[in-house]
Amino acid sequence: MTRALDGIDHNILRALQDDGRITNVDLAKRVHLSPAACLERVKRLQTDGYIRQYTALLDPARLDAGLLVFVEVVLDRTTPESFDDFRRAIATMPEVMECHMVAGGFDYLVKARLKDMAEYRAFLGRFLSMTRGVRETHTYPVMEEVKNVTAIPLRPPAERSS
Image (cartoon, rainbow, N blue to C red; front, side, top):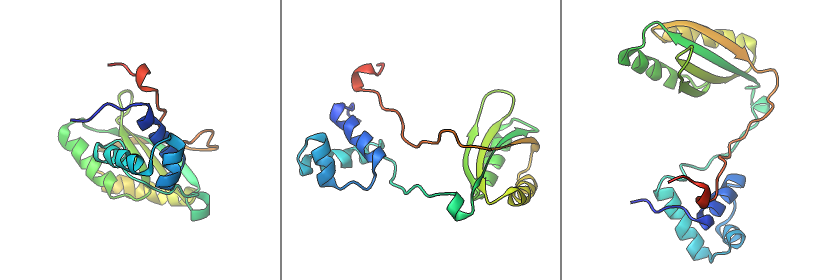
């Protein structure tokens, strides 16, 4: 059974979201624990699934992936098989950073990063040819990233609803 998070756990998670490369000694100082106790808590947070992975955030423009697009996808059928086919196809596309099934006027919202509009046109052609059942797409190229964060807002344990 997963133990409820306390204030120290939240402080550890905040610190790790700010700097995933912080040393255990520095993390322990920041959250006012001994290094051994801090390491034990971090391991528990990993085991319990609160910490899924550690990663580096890269600069897309420096890596020829400066074009960010969002694509609304409408499937021609909304059956379990259609959804499975779509998920399998999208999983093979490295340009796709995120894909979410949504409620509303379309079925999926896809976030993709590419070099430029020419590369996007080629991607869209592959996307449509590889993905059975896509009826239509609507593309929204991003002109300016106003806010792009990875940190999940953490509420103190007392504010969480039971």
